[in-house]
Image (tube, rainbow, N blue to C red):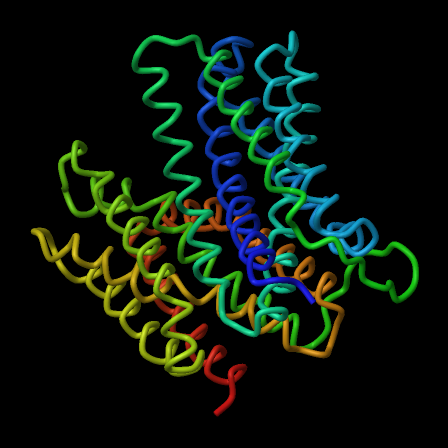
Length: 379
C-alpha cells in the first residue's frame, strides 16, 4: 500500500511527462524554419520531412501499448523522454536531407511513444486513486506547448544561436525525465499473445472515432483559423492569431476544472452541457461577420470541446473490451490518423469550395460527435 506522499509524487510525475510531451512537440516545431534554412530544403521536400515525423509517430503508436505492457510505463517514458533529447539535438547538426528525414522519423517515434504511454500511465493512476485526473493531466500538455513556444521565442529574441536554444530545451527535458521518472508506474501488464498490431474492437473503435473528431475540431482551429479569419472574415493579419490564442488559453483553463466537473456532474452531463457550447462557437464563426463577438466564438469552442478527449481516455480505464495499454494505443492511433489527414482534407475543401465549407463540415461532425458521445456514455 503506497503512502499518500508516494501517490502525490506519482501524480506530479505523470503531469510532468504530459508537460514534456507538449514541450517536445513545440520544440520540434520551433526548429523547422532553422532546419529548412540550414539544409536549404525546398517547400515540397520540407513537406516530406514533416510527414516523416508524423509517420514515425503513427507507426510507433501501433506498438506503444505492447511496449508499455512489457517494459512498464516508467521504463517506456524514460526511454521516450531521453530519445526526444537525442534526436532533437541530432536534427540540429545533420549534414544532409536524408539524415534529417531519418532523424525526424526517429523523433516522431519517440514523441508517439510518449504520447501513448503518458495516457496509459494516467489511467493507471486514476484507477489507483479512484478519482478523475485526466483533464488536469492533459491540461499540462497544453501548458507544455505554451512553455515550449515561450522558451524558444524568448531565447531566440535575445540572440542566442538556435542550436544552443535547442540544447537548453533538451537539457530541461532530460533533467525532468531523470528526476520524475522514478516515481512513475512500474507495473507491467500481462500480454494476450505476442507482440502485435493493435486492432480496435467495437467499443474501442467508437471511442477512437469520437476522439478523431475531437482532434479534427482542435486541428481546424490550430491549422486554419488564422487563414479563415483573414481571407473569409477580412480580419487584419495582425489579429489573425488572436482567435487561436483565445481558444488554447480557454481550453487549458477548462481542462483544469474538468475533473472536478466530471466528478460532480458525471461525464455524460458534462459533455451534454459543454459540447453544445462548442457548437454555438462554431456557428458564431460561420455567421458572425466581424467584431469582438466573432472572437468570443473561439472562447466558446475552447470551453465546449476541451474535455471530450480526457473524458473518453478515462473511459478506457473502465472498459473491459481490451487491455488498457492496447486500448489506449488503438485510440491514439485512430485519433492521430485524423490529425494527419485533417489539415489536408480541410485545405482541399477550402481550395475547391471555400473555408466556410471546411468549417461547416467540422460543425456537422461536431453534431455527430455529440450524439455518439451521448450514446457511448449511456444514461
